[in-house]
Image 1: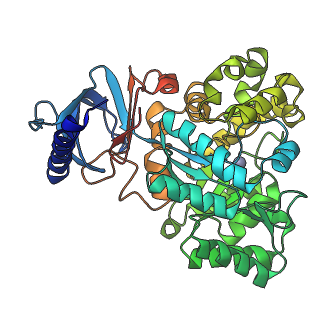
Image 2: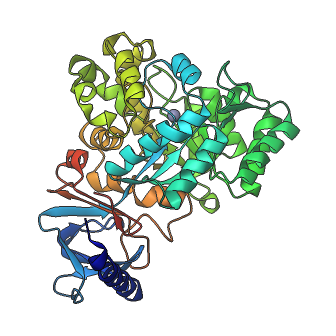
Length: 449
Ligand SMILES: [Zn+2]
């Protein structure tokens, strides 16, 4: 306790310190790490990155770029330094509970906004995810959580939100986050309502159950508002119709247990990727779960590890844990081992078409927790699907930023961009799974970890 006589001088001292701090913006220097800047070139050894305020001020090496006097130095020797990761497909309204019917009945939009989505966002950021595309959630909750994060009121990645799915008809009990459309005029009106509310992307699903006019209206209205359309690729006709009407991105490897995409779909994809003027076609395969399911059922350490409870209110965490007591008994996953046998061949087909694959995870679905989804997807791409680590990292940094048209500010580590930077001890180009324990997380110049 300060006595009254001391209190005033101390306050004067503190306010003068704060004044000095704001008059000359603080510089933070990350010194000595091995920089993977997101452009795909050779890593830069002994790097120096200077951060001033929210942005990167300069990038160089210990030989070429002096650290200014007074800078706060973070010793990064022995570490890999990367742009903050993106996860292009998360569900912040879900936290891994196995029963969607129970979840939707129990956690209404106010609880999602107050407790669930902030917990998911905080876990993602802690895992090194500084940007995420959040697909499918109640509209007001999505906008409010995104904006509270952007204002610095709660921790989380920069979010790009879709709000509710656009589809033929919502499944019973999901009307808050699934909007059905009936006719082209209604489709336009619903997309306009989302655009006017400020969403960043339109999520289209079950488009094979909609009329062509409705799908066309969804895409046209979204594009009129400069919003990309991302669409499910679960069934062949979802892909065919999505390609026909010009969606910008597909989600999931899809096609259930079928071993490959039919020839006409491959031809349509190639016709689309040949159109330079349209820019790349993106695909977010969300493939990791197929390969890890059997292992995780037999070795459910990731469920036992209390790390996924972090930031989650105890009543919700207990509810989730109770739903995962028998991880091998979840109806949701019974077909997964069969899908695992055919997803690698579909992934390989997509690779050959020249589209741009993005890292996204479906984080939040049963048994998949936000604190560990993204690194697992990277790990499977590299260690099971043979993607080279640099390509995998760029699918989680550079390309997502380009796909959301924010690459002027995000996606690489270079002067002028927002300082979204992570670092991890060791060589991630050799051992990608080091990303499961990110040591340093900086978002918009602020250190969170
Ligand atoms: Zn999803």
